[in-house]
Amino acid sequence: YDSPTFMDYRLFVLNGDLYLHANVDTVAVSKLDLRAKGFGDGDGDGNNESRSIPPVRKHGNENFDRPYKLRNLYGGDLLEVTLQRQFITIWSGGHGGKNFALFSVPNVTHPVSPDSVYVEINITPEHHVQQVLPDEYDQLTLQQVFELMWKKGTKKKRHANIDKIGQRSMKVVGNMTKSDESPEASFHTTDQYWFPGKTPFKVNSHGGACCVSFSLDDINMGGTQHNHHEPLLVGIAHTKVPWQPWYSKDHIPQERKDMLPHTHYVSFFYAFDPRPPFQ
Image 1 (cartoon, rainbow, N blue to C red):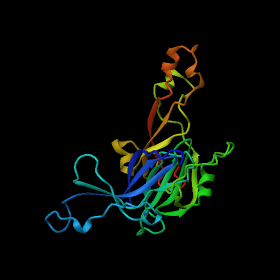
Image 2: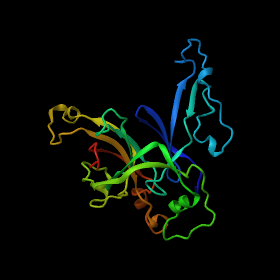
Image 3: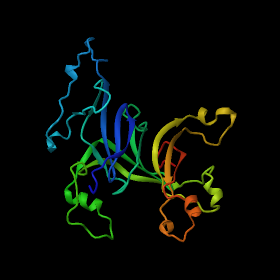
Image 4: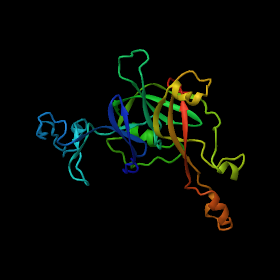
C-alpha cells in the first residue's frame, strides 16, 4: 500500500492454530507453524527431512498459498518458523484500521463445529466486531483496493502503491455488529484529576490483547456477588493523547506541554458479553 512496513506483531490462537497479526496500512494475518527441530519428528533420531519445506523463491500468485519456511536471523536454527500461506488483509476496518484483536467463541448453532472467529475493529466508544473466516479470502482487483484506500474528500492519486497482499481480502460473515455506547470507566488515571471533566485521551481505542474467559466463579471470586449471570470475555485495550496544534507554539508554557504530552499512551481492561453484539 502506501507503506510496505510491517509492525506491531502479535500472536493469536484460534481453534488451536497460531496466527500472526501485523499492522500495515490496515491489518494483515497469516497462519504460522512453530516447531523445535529434533523434537516430535516421529523417528527418534531428530531427522525431520519428511517435514522439510523448501523456501519459496518465486513470488507469483501460484506460490501465495504454499507454505513458506522463514530463514532464522538470530539464535541458531533449532526453531523452525513456517508461514502456512501468504498474508491475508482485513479490510473490515477500512484503510488506516489497525491493532485489531482476534478472538473465537463456541459455535452456538453447531457445538461440534470449530469456534466462530471474530475481529475487534474498535473497543470504544462502541464495540465494533466482525465475524471472519481467517483462512479464506476474496481476490480484489487493483481498482477495488484503490477505492478502499482512497479517503473520500481527498484528491485521488494516479499512482498508488498497491501490493498483492492487499488484494487478498479476508472473507467476512454477515455484517459488523455494534454494541451500545460503552459504560463509564470504573476508575481513571491521574489525568482525570489534572483535567477534571475533560479527559485528554482519544475516545476511540483499539485492542491490544484479547481474550481471557471469566467464568461466573471468577466474577464472584472473594464472595462478592455481582448481578451479571453469564461468563465474560476480558481484554486489554489502549488509546493515546491526540496531537494538539498548540504543541509547536512558543508562547505555550513548557509546563503545560509537559502535563499533556501527545505521545502519552494508556492501557485499560475491558469486559464484554461473549455473544453478538458483544455488549
